[in-house]
Length: 198
Image (cartoon, rainbow, N blue to C red):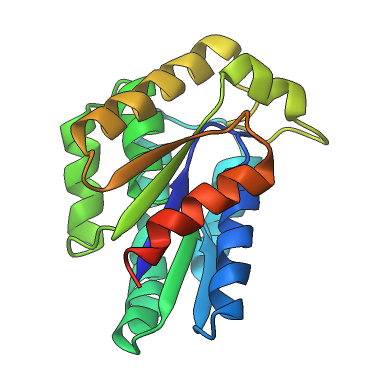
């Protein structure tokens, strides 16, 4: 089973990914908990460049995310799924489509096509979109923001709208959850959806 979590920065998606991975492990399942960009040495190195490096063009950003994803899928996600184990991933293709394809204006279909090519068409069984107003999410932010997190509220609103449109277009795969609810309530709702996949 391949499950991903999406949402604007500081929406709580990473917390929910961890809670689901822990619960699946408690059920006796073998789980790879991973993140994007990241999950392999190459992808983690790309993460550092994309999130903490110099300013770059939108297409360079999109291509770097896709390169990290290609390595992540080939060396971590697909081998885990082929063993019959579960993968819980913090961000995946929907993030590239929302951030670079829509918010950066590169084109939803072009960014999607790039990412489907480098992953050989691998999509999650279920995606949980943690919805939280960007202004509320930014108030949760702590520490030093990365290069993407430093974008203004206008950009984050575009990302939020992009995610909502993707959920509306893919209701069979993307489940929306209220990120303003207590985290244990969100986790319970997520588990109920996942039980149907077990």
